[in-house]
Length: 301
Image (tube, rainbow, N blue to C red; front, side):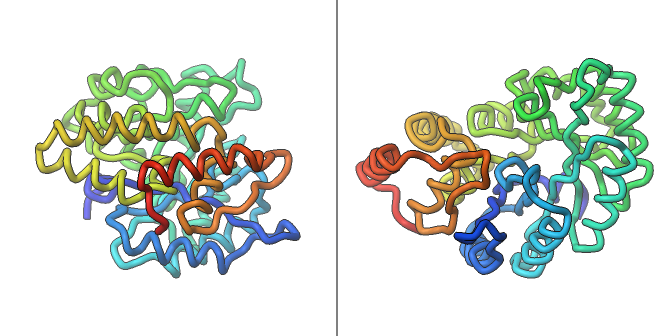
């Protein structure tokens, strides 16, 4: 399976369920994965923003990776968030994560010294990481989680020829079309959409898939949208895209990670509360959203 085939489809970011005493709940995580295994999801992304990676210890992170790689159904692809604030630390984490069975590493740009993160600095960082990584690298373009640091089109164009940098996940609102136009068709580099708002426009323009928060709690709906597109039924794809965007905006989307976890709970998965400093969704809002999902006929999984 080549890199494009491995990323072609819908990926669900994996949330990290916690126990009442704030420990990682591996049984709840495994239960979620077993349900995801029944869907057409292409694969899973643990240790991303929805997985609250920034609040996990490395020991917890590797425990999560073990659970994911051991529970996943055959053929599911595991892409893990591995970005750290130096190339050395990022490479060391990726090497250990690779030992736990990941297929590729998503790497958000370092951003603590955001005013020093020029294209030159980021090119050096990603090149060093890719040169030393035992698994392929996906550049994770997520300004929302990186002090508004945006991967520029010029930087992406410079990174794309590297044989171990295979794609960019675009979670920014910068048009996918701009990045796609800069990709040299002679390379194996590809683009994947990073949110439900840009998913259908992105695959319509040439992106090969998406890693979507909405797929965490509405996996079968997101997979259905992708299947409509693949079959050439753009009217159904557009209609479902519009529906999912409106539903997300009126429910889970406005509450971030806590909202995704709430959506999982309401659908019969195990979400639970996030770790502090994130707060859970207020109970009255949970009741309102539960009523919206009931009225929309969204079933429990």
